[in-house]
Image (cartoon, rainbow over all chains, first blue to last red; front, top):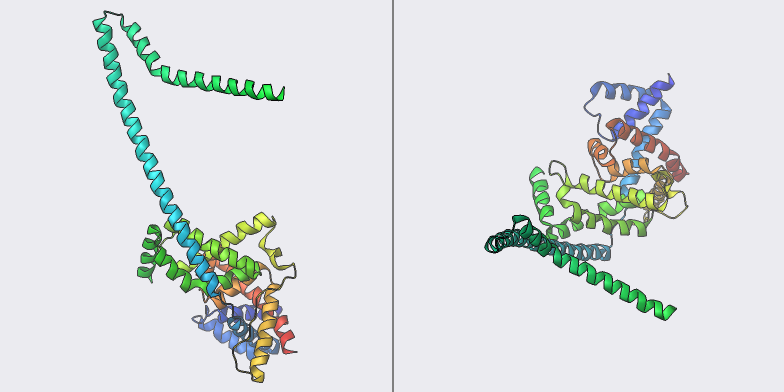
Length: 162
Length: 186
């Protein structure tokens, strides 16, 4: 009997234990015939059966406290995710509203500057520059104020360390 | 089963806490056993048990109701174990149980005190000890097949390996456990 035959038999035993080859009648018949003549493979088959029974009998149980702690953590996390989702929704609604307002006010301002320019009989480039300065002015002012604040803080801290 | 999977998928998309409570109850022992099989340590398995359910809550929308929930759950747990191991020791899962730590608590098997029960318990202890010495991928295949009763296809999708590899792992795992069983018989 070749080593390949034993190898094949052992593989069949392992997979047959997995109930995957029960439909393969020819392999089963060959295996039965082999087991009748081969003591070592027969012993292997018995050992595999014992091992599987042993594996199934190993009792590992989750404790009640683990389950309840997990359930509690999951519920808490679910609440966090829920509030995060609500916050995200609020932020996105606010952003949309701000964008819409900015768009509408820009159009209105543009028309306002155009009307003023026409009334004052100014060249269109003049009131357009005025419009740009008006739009950029808030951001410029805030930037200047922040820079001034930083400089003030740096000077103030410097006077302590120096 | 398909209808059940669809209901679970719907509940997971809603992040329904009651559904999750029921799922935790249902899979508690199976999931813990699987995690213990992969990690070999009860405390770590319990931590990962909790993390797995948090992950299920967060990624529940990814569950495809074409598959059984259990298969997806084990795959989530497996990924968490791999992430954990990569953080702790950037090697493969193979080295997991080589630190000699006690794994697989084997409590007393009921109150029957006959000789057979003692012998059986001893044998189980030997097999559990043998499991510790197997490479993680063999342990995983054996646990999923013989303790969880998964089909070879399901194991292949949990472990993300071809069917042939699963068969080979089961065969090699069983062969590797044989000396331990013989040790038990001595």
